[in-house]
Image (tube, rainbow, N blue to C red; front, top):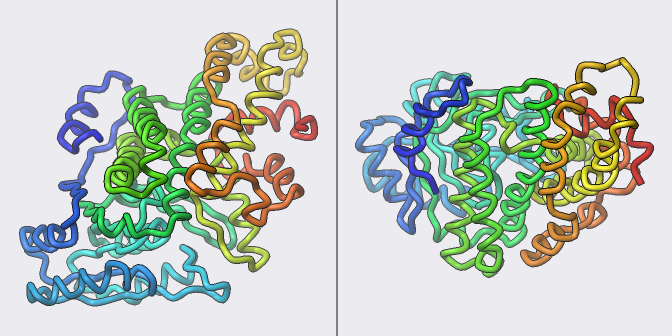
Length: 407
């Protein structure tokens, strides 16, 4: 994993010409004594009043021990334990955001997020709105957003990512992460495997719609993905080395988003479909499914579309030329960059390869394993591209062909 020092140095000298955001993180610790090191850091910073945000489960997993360590060091702290909704899920929506802000004392110096992705989203949003820094303490290697600026939250049933703030420090305790449920470990791997299509979509958006593209950020994401792939066996076994590789990959993916200030390096059509499924579950009062589990499955759905129908379309110049003039500039860009787009498409793995990797980790492989039926899959392929303004291949396909051609 790239170090903070290396990240800051490489970001300063990157020649892509795009805006890079200053990396404000001061410390990243991945060890078997990370909670103790978190308390030492708090002492060094001379924070006087701490607000710990957790849910009932993550408090038992790590919050209780952290609270005890803070008490031993005579550090004043409060606890904001976020409650689940009627379906038994903790969701980053309007209710929990207000709940968190009411639970964080106005005079707190810093907020500590103790949990997985949702608790971090809640803490990131709430701490930023209250003008307080926050510290990350992951309890499962389940997502790549621990150290990013983005907070995906659900407002009036719509999932939107708001750019808030990165943590000032991150303390990942390997001993705690190893005890995470296997489905959460598989979810973290699923979130990483989705980088195949997110990187492809980012390149496509750059070539066709002029989105800013940073080779440094892309290379950080790709390197993290490759490390996960190479260590799939160790990760599936849940040993110390495998879990360290996974959490380092997730953190490095977060770094890739951090320097560019948005999620394009790590989120493309596969994430849009995952978000669409999540919103459908919320609207229908169904219990939530782990984000990374949905991404692992949606990545296969997107790969199937990109590797078959979209590849066939881009390969056929005559067919492209006959698409019409509604978006003439974008079609001309596709023709101009046809070889490069084809190279990107040919580099993508087959969905069966992703399925094999996920199965190795005991993760869900097919949508129906997550309670997602064929009709919802079809609907998401037709509508999920509306969730973001990003110009993915999924968006191009829908605007010019229509997923009714998708078999």
